[in-house]
Image (tube, rainbow, N blue to C red):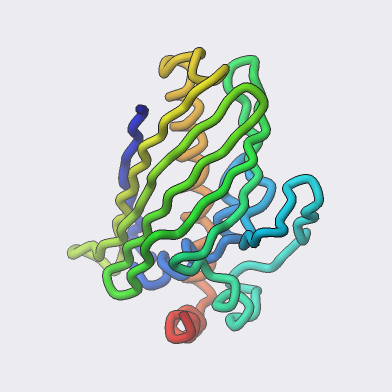
Length: 198
Protein backbone atom coordinates (compact mmCIF):
# COMPACT_ATOMS: atom_id res chain seq x y z
CA UNK A 1 0.00 0.00 0.00
CA UNK A 2 1.33 3.43 -0.95
CA UNK A 3 0.05 6.59 0.70
CA UNK A 4 0.21 10.11 -0.68
CA UNK A 5 -1.19 13.24 0.88
CA UNK A 6 -0.67 16.96 0.87
CA UNK A 7 -2.24 20.36 0.96
CA UNK A 8 -1.94 23.59 -0.92
CA UNK A 9 -3.22 27.09 -0.41
CA UNK A 10 -4.87 29.50 -2.82
CA UNK A 11 -4.40 32.99 -1.47
CA UNK A 12 -7.03 34.72 -3.59
CA UNK A 13 -9.50 31.97 -4.54
CA UNK A 14 -12.37 31.41 -2.08
CA UNK A 15 -13.45 27.81 -1.29
CA UNK A 16 -16.68 27.97 -3.32
CA UNK A 17 -14.73 28.93 -6.48
CA UNK A 18 -12.20 26.16 -5.90
CA UNK A 19 -15.07 23.69 -5.36
CA UNK A 20 -16.77 24.57 -8.64
CA UNK A 21 -13.55 24.15 -10.66
CA UNK A 22 -12.65 20.85 -8.93
CA UNK A 23 -16.22 19.63 -9.60
CA UNK A 24 -15.69 19.88 -13.38
CA UNK A 25 -14.35 16.64 -14.93
CA UNK A 26 -13.06 18.60 -17.94
CA UNK A 27 -11.06 21.04 -15.78
CA UNK A 28 -9.65 18.09 -13.82
CA UNK A 29 -8.75 16.20 -16.99
CA UNK A 30 -7.02 19.24 -18.47
CA UNK A 31 -4.84 19.59 -15.37
CA UNK A 32 -3.99 15.91 -14.96
CA UNK A 33 -0.94 15.10 -17.08
CA UNK A 34 -1.44 11.90 -19.02
CA UNK A 35 -5.22 11.88 -18.59
CA UNK A 36 -6.98 11.57 -21.94
CA UNK A 37 -10.53 11.73 -20.61
CA UNK A 38 -12.83 11.41 -17.60
CA UNK A 39 -16.41 10.61 -18.56
CA UNK A 40 -19.52 9.05 -16.98
CA UNK A 41 -19.54 5.29 -17.52
CA UNK A 42 -22.44 2.92 -18.14
CA UNK A 43 -22.60 -0.84 -18.76
CA UNK A 44 -22.00 -0.44 -22.50
CA UNK A 45 -18.86 1.69 -22.15
CA UNK A 46 -15.81 0.54 -24.10
CA UNK A 47 -12.37 2.11 -23.60
CA UNK A 48 -11.33 1.30 -27.16
CA UNK A 49 -14.48 2.79 -28.69
CA UNK A 50 -14.83 6.03 -26.73
CA UNK A 51 -13.88 9.23 -28.56
CA UNK A 52 -13.47 12.15 -26.15
CA UNK A 53 -14.71 15.59 -27.16
CA UNK A 54 -11.88 17.94 -28.01
CA UNK A 55 -11.54 21.62 -27.05
CA UNK A 56 -14.36 21.63 -24.49
CA UNK A 57 -14.60 25.05 -22.85
CA UNK A 58 -14.05 25.38 -19.12
CA UNK A 59 -14.70 28.33 -16.87
CA UNK A 60 -14.62 31.27 -17.22
CA UNK A 61 -15.55 30.85 -20.95
CA UNK A 62 -17.88 27.86 -20.59
CA UNK A 63 -21.65 28.06 -20.26
CA UNK A 64 -22.43 27.76 -16.51
CA UNK A 65 -25.27 25.31 -17.18
CA UNK A 66 -22.92 23.04 -19.14
CA UNK A 67 -20.42 23.04 -16.26
CA UNK A 68 -23.16 22.31 -13.70
CA UNK A 69 -24.62 19.57 -15.90
CA UNK A 70 -21.35 17.65 -16.23
CA UNK A 71 -20.16 18.14 -12.62
CA UNK A 72 -19.11 15.05 -10.66
CA UNK A 73 -22.08 13.32 -9.03
CA UNK A 74 -22.10 11.14 -5.92
CA UNK A 75 -22.71 7.49 -6.79
CA UNK A 76 -21.73 7.96 -10.44
CA UNK A 77 -19.03 5.78 -11.96
CA UNK A 78 -16.55 7.44 -14.32
CA UNK A 79 -14.16 6.01 -16.88
CA UNK A 80 -10.73 7.60 -17.10
CA UNK A 81 -7.87 6.79 -19.46
CA UNK A 82 -4.44 7.59 -18.03
CA UNK A 83 -1.06 7.13 -19.66
CA UNK A 84 1.82 7.71 -17.27
CA UNK A 85 5.52 7.14 -17.81
CA UNK A 86 7.15 5.41 -14.83
CA UNK A 87 10.82 4.70 -15.43
CA UNK A 88 11.05 2.89 -18.76
CA UNK A 89 7.41 1.77 -18.55
CA UNK A 90 4.56 3.83 -20.03
CA UNK A 91 1.38 1.93 -19.19
CA UNK A 92 -2.07 2.95 -20.43
CA UNK A 93 -4.39 2.53 -17.46
CA UNK A 94 -8.06 1.90 -18.14
CA UNK A 95 -9.50 3.24 -14.91
CA UNK A 96 -12.90 3.17 -13.29
CA UNK A 97 -13.63 5.69 -10.51
CA UNK A 98 -16.77 6.05 -8.38
CA UNK A 99 -17.54 9.27 -6.53
CA UNK A 100 -18.54 7.99 -3.08
CA UNK A 101 -19.29 11.26 -1.33
CA UNK A 102 -19.82 14.87 -2.38
CA UNK A 103 -20.74 17.30 0.37
CA UNK A 104 -21.46 20.77 -1.03
CA UNK A 105 -21.63 22.39 2.41
CA UNK A 106 -18.32 21.14 3.80
CA UNK A 107 -16.55 20.92 0.41
CA UNK A 108 -15.67 17.23 0.81
CA UNK A 109 -15.32 14.75 -2.05
CA UNK A 110 -14.17 11.12 -1.80
CA UNK A 111 -13.72 8.48 -4.48
CA UNK A 112 -12.65 4.87 -4.96
CA UNK A 113 -11.33 3.34 -8.13
CA UNK A 114 -9.22 0.74 -9.85
CA UNK A 115 -7.37 0.41 -13.10
CA UNK A 116 -5.49 -2.06 -15.24
CA UNK A 117 -2.74 -1.78 -17.81
CA UNK A 118 -0.68 -4.46 -19.49
CA UNK A 119 1.01 -6.31 -16.65
CA UNK A 120 0.01 -3.83 -13.92
CA UNK A 121 -3.04 -2.94 -11.87
CA UNK A 122 -4.01 -0.72 -8.97
CA UNK A 123 -6.86 0.08 -6.63
CA UNK A 124 -7.18 3.34 -4.74
CA UNK A 125 -9.17 5.44 -2.32
CA UNK A 126 -8.83 9.19 -2.39
CA UNK A 127 -10.42 12.32 -1.05
CA UNK A 128 -10.13 16.05 -0.63
CA UNK A 129 -11.56 18.77 1.55
CA UNK A 130 -11.48 22.53 1.01
CA UNK A 131 -11.20 24.89 3.98
CA UNK A 132 -11.40 28.68 4.30
CA UNK A 133 -8.18 30.51 5.04
CA UNK A 134 -8.88 32.63 8.10
CA UNK A 135 -6.33 35.30 7.29
CA UNK A 136 -7.49 35.90 3.71
CA UNK A 137 -10.30 35.26 1.24
CA UNK A 138 -8.47 32.17 0.03
CA UNK A 139 -8.79 28.43 0.43
CA UNK A 140 -6.72 25.49 1.67
CA UNK A 141 -7.17 22.18 -0.08
CA UNK A 142 -6.17 18.98 1.72
CA UNK A 143 -6.01 15.77 -0.31
CA UNK A 144 -5.01 12.16 0.25
CA UNK A 145 -4.73 8.94 -1.75
CA UNK A 146 -4.04 5.36 -0.75
CA UNK A 147 -3.10 3.11 -3.64
CA UNK A 148 -2.42 -0.60 -3.85
CA UNK A 149 -0.25 -1.26 -6.91
CA UNK A 150 0.65 -4.66 -8.32
CA UNK A 151 2.46 -6.06 -11.34
CA UNK A 152 5.28 -4.53 -13.38
CA UNK A 153 4.94 -1.02 -11.97
CA UNK A 154 4.95 -2.28 -8.36
CA UNK A 155 8.27 -4.02 -9.06
CA UNK A 156 9.85 -0.62 -9.78
CA UNK A 157 9.35 0.28 -6.12
CA UNK A 158 8.50 3.49 -4.34
CA UNK A 159 11.91 5.03 -5.14
CA UNK A 160 10.79 5.24 -8.79
CA UNK A 161 7.02 5.63 -8.28
CA UNK A 162 7.00 8.37 -5.60
CA UNK A 163 8.78 11.08 -7.64
CA UNK A 164 6.48 10.39 -10.63
CA UNK A 165 3.35 10.57 -8.45
CA UNK A 166 4.57 13.73 -6.73
CA UNK A 167 5.32 15.36 -10.07
CA UNK A 168 1.85 14.53 -11.44
CA UNK A 169 0.22 15.92 -8.28
CA UNK A 170 2.42 19.03 -8.28
CA UNK A 171 1.66 19.75 -11.94
CA UNK A 172 -2.04 19.14 -11.34
CA UNK A 173 -2.33 21.63 -8.50
CA UNK A 174 -0.27 24.35 -10.18
CA UNK A 175 -2.37 23.98 -13.34
CA UNK A 176 -5.73 23.86 -11.55
CA UNK A 177 -4.67 26.86 -9.44
CA UNK A 178 -4.13 28.82 -12.67
CA UNK A 179 -7.62 27.82 -13.85
CA UNK A 180 -9.11 28.91 -10.52
CA UNK A 181 -7.26 32.24 -10.66
CA UNK A 182 -8.58 32.85 -14.18
CA UNK A 183 -12.11 32.18 -12.93
CA UNK A 184 -11.63 34.44 -9.92
CA UNK A 185 -10.36 37.33 -12.09
CA UNK A 186 -13.21 37.24 -14.60
CA UNK A 187 -16.08 35.83 -12.56
CA UNK A 188 -19.21 37.94 -12.22
CA UNK A 189 -21.31 35.62 -10.08
CA UNK A 190 -20.95 32.64 -12.44
CA UNK A 191 -19.62 30.23 -9.82
CA UNK A 192 -22.37 31.18 -7.37
CA UNK A 193 -24.96 30.36 -10.06
CA UNK A 194 -23.28 27.02 -10.73
CA UNK A 195 -23.14 26.17 -7.03
CA UNK A 196 -26.86 26.82 -6.90
CA UNK A 197 -27.38 24.29 -9.72
CA UNK A 198 -25.08 21.60 -8.25
